[in-house]
Length: 374
Length: 203
Image (cartoon, rainbow over all chains, first blue to last red; front, top):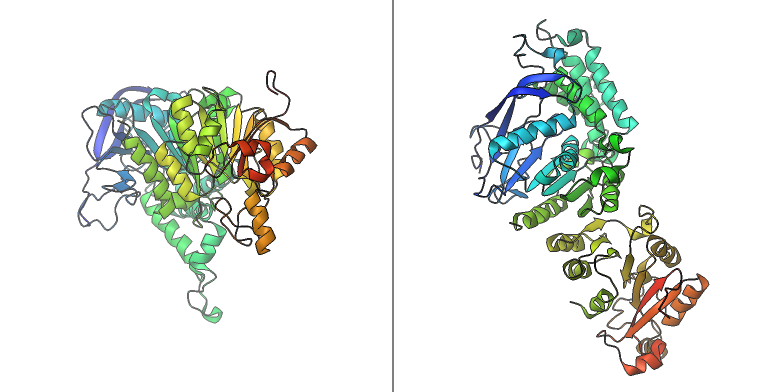
C-alpha cells in the first residue's frame, strides 16, 4: 500500500525574460513539478493541480517508500481516487516565489549571483498562470482536461479560465472566492506583521544574517490555522480540554488547542520561508480578476469557455459558501456551464484537503464525466 | 423520458435559457440540452439528485429554494420550470412572484388535491388521502401546501398572474376527455403556463 505511487520531482527551466504584472521581470526561472499517471497519445488527459497558500509540488505519492507522509492531496490523487491517475495525467508544481524548489526568495538571482531574499519580486496569480502555461507547453499539453485547485489554488483556476480560455476544458474551483474580503486581507496583514516585526526577520535578509523569524512565522501560521478551522470544528477537536487536567498544575501550554497551534506554528517555521509567505499572501490579496472590468465578474468570466465545478463547504468562513455563490452567479449570468455543490462539513476551510465522502463523490463523479469526454 | 417532462418540453423554445427549480435527477434539463440546445440550470439540494445531474452532464446548482432566489436578476431567464414542487415550498406566493420576476414564462405543475380519489378517500376513510401521486402520511409528507386546481387558479387571479395554458392529465400523464370537462374532479396533475401579462396570439 505504502509504495503504491513513488514519484520523483522534475525541474522545468525557462531561460528567457519573464515579465511580471508588477512591472518587474525575472531573467528566467525554474519550476519544480511532479506528474502522476501517463499522458495519452492525443495529450487530452492532462489535469493541472494548483496549490494553495502553503502548498507545493508534492501533491501525491511518496518520494521514497519509507516516507512517513505522502503528498498533501494524496487522498484525492491516485489510482481509483477522485482524480484518477489511471485515467488522467496529473501535473502538480510549486508556484513561482515558492520555497520548495521553484524560483523564489531562496533561489539565487542569476543577474547578481546572490540569493534573492526579500528582493524577489511580487508575483500575482496571473503571473503564476502564465508560468504554468509555459510548463504546459514544455510538457506538450495544449489543453488541460481539467484544472483543479482549492483556496488560492481555486483562484488560479479562475484566472486560467479567463486568461487562457482555450486551454481549459473544465475548471474545478474549490473553497475559493472571486477576490478577498477586507477581513481576509486583515488576517493576512496580521500574519505578515507578525513576521516582519520579528527581530530575526532582518528586513527579509535573515538568510545572510544566519537568523530565521521562527517566532513571527509561527504566529502567522497560528493565525492561519484559526481561520482554517470552524468554531464548532475546533470545539469538537479540542474542546476546552486541559492537558494536565488540573488548573493547579497548569503550565504555559494548558489547553489542547494551544498545544495544537504552537506545534503547527513551530513546525511551519522550520519548513517554510518567511519571504515566500509574504509573497504568497500578497498574491492572495491582490487577486481580483474583475477589477479590470468595472468589478463585473460576469463580464470578466464571459471570456471563459471552460465548464465549471464550484465546491464550497458549509462551515468555511475564510472563503464561505456565499463567496463561492458569487462565482456561481457570475458564471450563470455569463451563460457558462456550471455545477455547484456546498458540502456539509464542520472542518471549516480545511475541508478542501480532507477526504469527505460527499465531497469526493461530487469531485470524482464530475471528473469521471470529464474523463469519458474524449 | 417521463411523460410529464415531455409535456413541459413542448413548451420550451430552441436555445432558451431555462431555470428548473427542484430539478431532481435532471431528466428534463438533459433532454432540453440535447433536443432544444437550451442554456439550462437546475436547482436542487438533495445530494443524490445532484450526483445524478453531474453524471448526466446537467448544470445543477446546490441551492435551497426556500432561502430565496434573490441571486437571479429580473428577466434573467426565458423560462422558469417547477414540476411537482410548489406544493412543498414554504411560501408558494413568494415563489410564484419570484419565478415570474426571473422569467415571463413559467411552467408549474402540481398534484390536484381535489381529484375524485382524494375526495372519496377523505369522505370514506376520514383520514388524509394517500394515493399514487400522494404517497406520504400527513406528518412525513414534504407536501405542506397541497391545493386543488381551483385553489391555484384563484390564487393566480388574486396575484394578477395570467394563465396562458393549462394541461390536465391523469396519473399516466395522458389527457382524457372527461378531464377537460371536469378537470378539478378527474385531473390528477395540471401543468400551467404562466406569464405576467397576456402574450399576443395566446388566449
